[in-house]
Amino acid sequence: MEKKIPYKIYLKEDEIPKQWYNVRADMKNKPAPLLNPGTHKPMTFEELRPVFCDELVKQELDDNTAYFDIPEEIYNFYKMYRPSPLVRAYCLEEKLQTPAKIYYKFEGNNTSGSHKLNSAIAQAYYAKKQGLKGVTTETGAGQWGTALSMACSYFDLDCKVYMVKVSYEQKPFRREVMRTYGASVTPSPSDTTKVGRQILEKYPGTTGSLGCAISEAVEVATENEGYRYVLGSVLNQVLLHQSVIGLEAKAALDKYNITPDIIIGCAGGGSNLGGLISPFMGEKLRGEKDYDIVAVEPASCPSFTRGKFAYDFCDTGMVCPLAKMYTLGSGFIPSANHAGGLRFHGMSSILSQLYHDGYMRAVSVEQTAVFEAAQQFARVEGILPAPESSHAIRAAIDEALKCKETGEEKTILFGLTGTGYFDMVAYQKYNDGVMTDYIPTDEELQKSFDSLPKVD
Image (cartoon, rainbow, N blue to C red; front, side, top):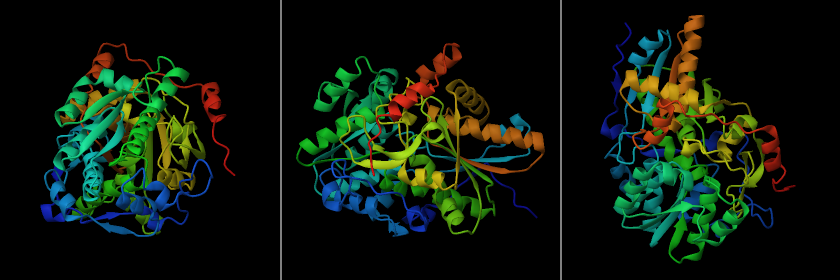
């Protein structure tokens, strides 16, 4: 007899994963290494040390260790809000009249309101352990900046955040949460850094991008003794920390012998998607199981679906190492899309390699369709989702409606990365009927592609 699946499946506290999983260990084709922008040679530990914390550099460069122990201090912090629930979306299924079974892993039940805290606390811990004064970072919609400010407050570290200018203006309350936790928040690009002034001169009136904010944060970190730069997405180390999401989700599903057919995550830089899919992708890479893994990105910033798989700068100011990834070009400035956390021109090297090798697929969606799905979800499931998360909701609903047409009883798992209570300007524009969709032209993208660095 089949077990009755509860609305929420909770693991016990002692079932929180005690190790992070490094999917690179099971990849036949490893992600291409970061390159020194001057020599085009792989970045070494010594070259990365001035930018990142030592332990994080080791994690970044390690392609072969499958599991990393989670330090006790981080594990104890996780206990404040983990394990997070795996929820059966019974009400959404009923509303859609679909035979599909829909589950979502909800990461918004902590003060930062998103999954970002999983890596923020880890990176702050390693900075404190190294004896640093503080860290610098960028943030888009503000979830990462909020999470990092909370983590730095916990470890008594200074936190300097460069927030994408359009989000700084659209989401003032998230900015104030960061300041409440003690962080300084600067709209980017700004006139407080050399690279910021250069960007403002080249792109006057720009609303900014994650690439711009990264450049400023890296400059401040490397020019101030006792500081290092930390990042909320894209990097290998971040996907490693976020694997706690997927490990918990899989353990919860295994309790009821549930195997998902489709796994869906929003994709900006790759932290949430990479974390959610990690153990499932590991099984796929080892040939143990097969899953349909779907990355969902905004049509206004379609790095997977319209980008080039090439080496590129991770930042607009071209001060960071080169990463091989799906990219729209570091000079691409996305439109002022309300999914601020997805407004990055590139994608995680890990996910880029997996996508290139055919282990996952990608779709792009327009933001009016995303907010339509967000509103539908909020009305039946009782959670106001973040715009970023709502990209995954859109794709999950679309897949469930396909099942309605075909009669297939597929099981869908998606990541609900966080809440949207500080995104009400976006919801207001949608409700007022003034939200618009912007899709870059081929000519715009080609102009950006033409500036890609030439790497042999």
